Length: 287
Image 1 (tube, one colour):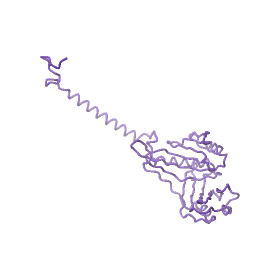
Image 2 (cartoon, helix red, strand yellow):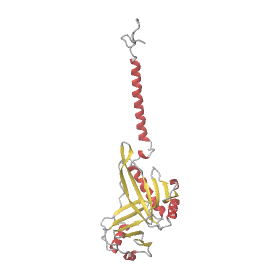
Image 3 (cartoon, helix red, strand yellow):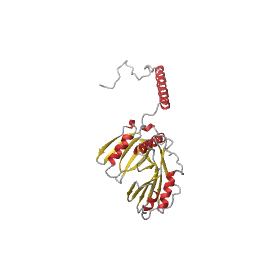
């Protein structure tokens, strides 16, 4: 077919073609703007009034109290008679909440001493004592027994043996927006755990820590569990014998390099190696 134009035919693009309906275009533009405004308003109302529904919408600052309460529940479930310690919080930055937003992860842990071969029983006991809505359970894996639970607000709880005579129970936020950040609750430096830690350091001939690291967690009944941490400078391993004078009765554990005893309401744990003398003193949740 040739490109010639038949006589009498006016091309549609010519000057006499009908003009577009400008009124219809104005109505379409107005409707689009109105829909965008309505959508923005609904989004603002949802953000203001509705609770977040996924982990990525809750910041680290908002998740922090949930993690603190979870650690207190774990300490209470371990039992006041256990040899345990609250581990200092750890914040890992640099994860990605979205491809365009950085985040951070908060982890807190409780360590319970468990003789080799009893880890499964310890985890079962703890799982049975946790709140029912956590749906805690213990399963066998190739790496040993593993406890898993849901503390709510997208905070995961896991636990298992660490291979050094301990069971570690961890509450983990997963990657979150930082928000206002996580600030641990302050701990008074005049508690019995600090006094017991200082007494243990003096008995071992170690320098008394002027400001030990203090960790706390709220117990379910309103009390507070607390741990004071101290690590002496590297040196020769100190014998645990001098600690016997501080013990209320027989030691809770005497398995070098680890020694544990009770002094009043405080459980003192000493790990004495050639590299360092690590001391912790803990006031546990009441039974």
